[in-house]
Amino acid sequence: MAAKRYVFITGASSGIGFQFARYCAQRGDALLLVSRSAERLQKAADHIRTQYAADVLTLSCDLTQPSAVADVMEWLDTVQIVPRLIIHNAGFGAFGAFHQLPEESIEEQIAVHDLFPLCFTRRILPRLLEAPPATILFIASTAAFAPVPFLNVYAAAKALQLHSALALRAELDGTGVQVSCCCPGPVATGFFDTAQMSNRPPFPLRLMDPETVVRYTMRQLERGKALIIPGALNRWIARFSQWMPKTTAARIAASLYRRQLNKRK
Ligand SMILES: NC(=O)c1ccc[n+]([C@@H]2O[C@H](COP(=O)([O-])OP(=O)(O)OC[C@H]3O[C@@H](n4cnc5c(N)ncnc54)[C@H](OP(=O)(O)O)[C@@H]3O)[C@@H](O)[C@H]2O)c1
Image 1 (tube, protein in one colour):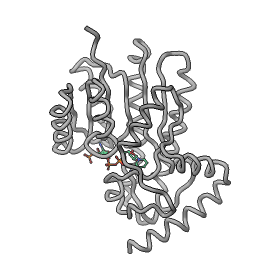
Image 2 (cartoon, protein in one colour):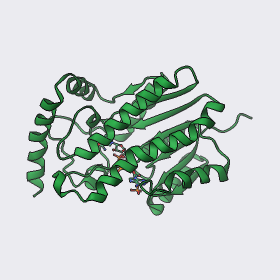
Image 3 (cartoon, helix red, strand yellow):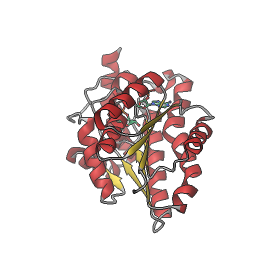
């Protein structure tokens, strides 16, 4: 009997991460799910077990904590599993004027989007390289392509994720470990409530549903794509914002998001 293929997903209790978990369970993968809130994670895991008879292991862990990498590695050592697919998905955005952001939210955004995924990847990589093939997928955002005022730290943290993922991909070329980065545009999840912003994007973008985002991403991942941008309009916006001078992109984004911030007040 073939060994089970384990997929490790962070932020699996809701939204995009939960849909990745469902997709993978449906195709027969076993799951290692991590999120902060134990109750929501358990509920998500129970749903997947019942629906797909999948093997699901969970770890409740706040990935912004300095001990998070060690805690997750200890868990993987205890269960003696090397995942074949790693999806770095957990995250949140803090929307607002930079000088009013709580300092801890700056630290937490950088920790959850950058420090945890990169330090964990560094720790697990030797195991993946010993027994390829394996895949690492980073969930960044179209916000990674330009500076975004009022989502300053979020966009900058996503830019670091994107650059680091693509650099690592080139570094690992030919090793059997594939690294890809998905940059979704606005998706209908709890993200906007957490960020305390309206879920109506400030320009004519439709919110994509998380199932479509995941289906598209997994198809592209299987084709070995480096950069995955779900949605034709999002792909166009990403291309356009890379071509534009960063100062111009920042000014346009500032005027769009300022309007949204004013509506919140
Ligand atoms: N929705 C969008 O428009 C959009 C667009 C582009 C990119 N993204 C990215 O997609 C990813 C998933 O977001 P989503 O839209 O699915 O939002 P979501 O529904 O709010 O889900 C976020 C997930 O991340 C987990 N999480 C947050 N902070 C965590 C922490 N400190 N430790 C552990 N887990 C943590 C949450 O767990 P608990 O809440 O259960 O603790 C939850 O499972 C994020 O990286 C986000 O930046 C979202």
